[in-house]
Image 1: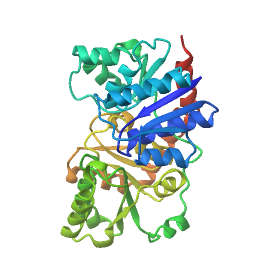
Image 2: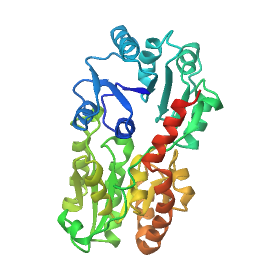
Image 3: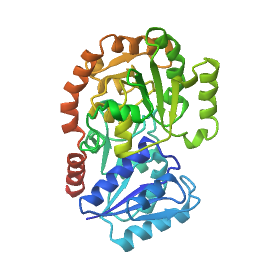
Image 4: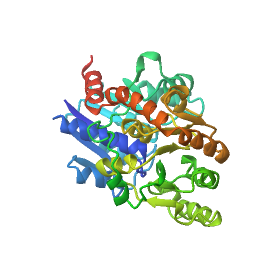
Length: 369
């Protein structure tokens, strides 16, 4: 079975990382994988660094790039690829025309972004009608897809993103925290996400003065790089707010990290904050769950379902620093109880999110007639 993954996104966020992780895991499982991506982007660099074969495209024009369509078609036909797997909705307008007449090629798609409104016109019926199976990360996203896309129940399958449960696991170590620059008695709050207005780092910063009134040793750690759409602007906006609120060394900016290094930062956190305005199913929250870190998340999108409506994390209102501060303080008021809840959920999450099992589920769909 030869598998061609396609993602022409310029960004390097959850969507691109999840697609990359799947392709890498399939390669490591012995599958013949090729990845089509843009040239000179983070995704291409990661593929090369990890030895995943890639076909790089320069100057991709979404929807209408005939040159890209023809090149994709040539790759599929000459390479004997039986499976094509997409993950970026903009790419559908390039992939589907490239597969015209290639009825023996199975096309799969992982939907990661919420569908904001109806897309059931003839053009979208043409695009989505070619998808053999669409993987969605949560029932919330499945419901959104059924409501707004020209797909049927039989096309959709709920499969969580895969995470390496051997890397993301509880490993709290006081010496490690000190090595990262934290005082032994610090209360470390953390956000792990690209720096982008909808991810809510701004609200997390604005929540800090209230939290510091009760916990003067609290520190906020923001792990992630700027989104490609906000390069040079978002860090400035966040740092300006830190300066305005006189938070000084109470807010720490950490560049994007992956794998074991990312797990180290997660395990340094006392509380994981997910102040995003809307998430379908947060990958960084999955990682925090596997590390058994207590979570405060927003009551929007798929986050309530992911936290079982408050059973395994505190829910607060989105875009509301006051609510975020109050929810964080509730967790800190009884941190040991929050840690017990997190550990309880971790046992189930380790089985549900395990990358090896996710890969097998997806490969089984590839093989299905």
